[in-house]
Length: 122
Image (cartoon, rainbow, N blue to C red; front, side, top):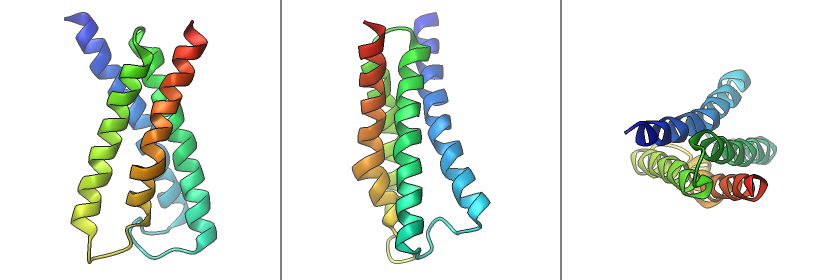
């Protein structure tokens, strides 16, 4: 039972590491998440998202203490589910570049973070 709780906490903490960075980028920039954006803002935001998603996947794998790649995949699935839900709710009501980037680049980056953790742990 404790191992399951540790796994759940690891995945949630990994996701929070990613989500908090996304919140901070938009909050500090004063830019609405679903508003049209300049190419430079999109590239900077996507780069930050990719880095923090990888960090989140790494953290999930590290905190779990076992099967780091599996925990990073779970964290990526949570990220993907949130982005997909946001995409569906935003269609026709705003820009969707951030959700598409999360699905196409950030979720795979989270898995890469778990793979890096698995590589370091062996």
